Image (cartoon, rainbow over all chains, first blue to last red; front, side, top):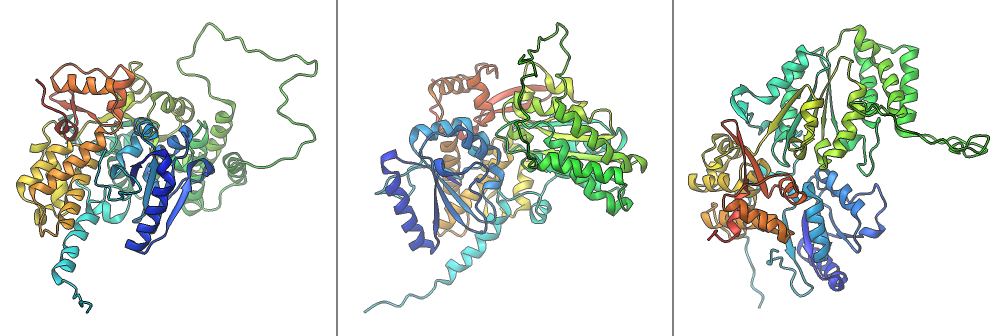
Length: 121
Length: 416
């Protein structure tokens, strides 16, 4: 489970680039989701090696709380969950969601030109 | 002409070298899985007091001898609470007639709102499922209670001509509650909790008739970080089963340990606290055993194992994660073993994760603590640092103290 930080204006481009990169490198399809469209009770649980990218397009504290309290169930059996957020939301998530934070593999700054994830925050 | 590339046998061997190690270290794997269970290194004593028996031993014997006891296990994120609860469950399972229920809070609440009575309902439904197997066909009374409980738990749709939730009386008057002067020690049970509690009491009848030993272990309530949310559960659901022979053991959030109201000690019959694993993680045999049981000796030098133990701060989840991420660095480096540079990179990664999102006021608190100044979990900033494990609580020789997580401290400049 990764927290990827990017400028809000670049989010769409990052999503497209990441999806294309994962398809080329891993032959896998990334399921793209938008936080504001996520229905309550439908948390992005990743099972069986599935990869889901959840873009926080707005600040949704109730969703962050739900992710935090279900953090131990979000990623199972080799699944990958990528949370794409702007810097301000990232800071709020990290402060508000300690359970989620403790289960993050890493936190990266990411831009459309550089998907290497070589820039830890 | 295109070059034909042959697979490098060394690379595929290397994959076999790291994959089993990394899989055994997976800190995200559910530790209820048999593979993870086999890797558990039980603590031999209470982490706060080496002269006291292990927490799981204390909890299990209390459940066996004092039915109806309510116990709380408090500890920070990744401190090993679930493992301790599973070990308690294993001990209780040694009695074939014992009725044990392991509940995760996610089974009965979506956490978005407090839903008093939900945990009681979950307990009732799980107990009912065991009646037929243990005692044969349940009585009509018990079956009827179960049917009502199911309705309350899962909801139903009823059709009315008018909205029954019209609070106005016939004469248009509206009721207003005026609180009395005498405050009860704990708030009254809600009507719904009382209703569920009565139904649960009926479902319990066959167990009471057979003098059963029932223990309910509730994990995950500690994910309700704010003490007030946990209290709401305890004051309603747990209190409703006080006086029955049902024993409850619940994981509680760390911040309650530091809560000035002393609710934990006031409400629960028995409370145990798991601090960060060791005051001196570098010297901890327990931490090293955890890594060695997962095969660390095959890939890491003794010095690197020491470094991982030290920078884990004694947080078990961080210990596993550091070893795992060091192994991933080594694999990506095409190295046949994990060297000091890979461990350093893993420590930096963990430290960066702890540093992310730390505000100015919190940096100030962290720097003060690094300089040896006092740290008190009274302010919201300091409580947040504790909940997020940027500051760890330790216990040694009966003395509690705080330290900045060593992986985070490593990233910050030395104090002047």
